[in-house]
Image (cartoon, rainbow, N blue to C red; front, side, top):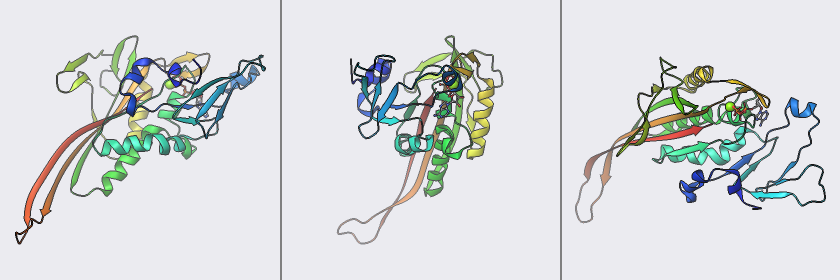
Length: 268
Ligand SMILES: Nc1ncnc2c1ncn2[C@@H]1O[C@H](COP(=O)(O)OP(=O)(O)OP(=O)(O)O)[C@@H](O)[C@H]1O
Ligand SMILES: [Mg+2]
């Protein structure tokens, strides 16, 4: 029906936990093919209200179809703006002990890889994944009494088969497994320790070269597969807890520790 963001995305994504799911829309500029065909932009947005409108070409008198989202990004918006408003709080949550997922959904050529992986130039269009790394490393630098281990994995799902884009044997098919405590995981998926944003960019580049790519009418660099890039974060805290107890002079010094493993998934 009208005005319903749920028309746009698979139901299972919504049902994963409706309270904590945000749905935003991003529109890219017309590409060369669309311009050559003299295609008309049929989409407009009310950014204040987070609404978008789609008009039926050649039926100007019909009211446009209307959809409402949690955020709307038009052709001139940058990945930087999207990151700050949408991804930043999610990645911040991961450093505080929550898991998170950013799922890019859309037809071929719509801009999923552009948004997630991005281009180094201009800087405002650097992707969500390198920005998340930068963000995590900044947080690590400002946090005392805590050790962090940052690792990355990158897989693709193509024709129902899972492959490790960073593995030594890219052709090997990996198996999806379920563990009673760890949940669903991919057996033998390689993990790569990352120390800097530069290393992250190297890993993205390496994985990208290994993706099943091909040509579609809408995208000459089409990914042809679904992929999941994951940042795994191990947080280990050791500190001295200092408490003053009423009526008792002196201090009570107690060593406390915690160890967390959290992850943020980027699906595109
Ligand atoms: N917001 C944008 N501004 C400018 N160019 C864009 C934008 N979004 C996408 N593009 C360009 O459009 C083309 C297609 O984008 P992209 O490769 O990200 O599509 P995709 O959704 O990953 O498609 P596929 O499913 O085929 O892999 C690319 O050349 C990309 O640079
Ligand atoms: Mg792609």
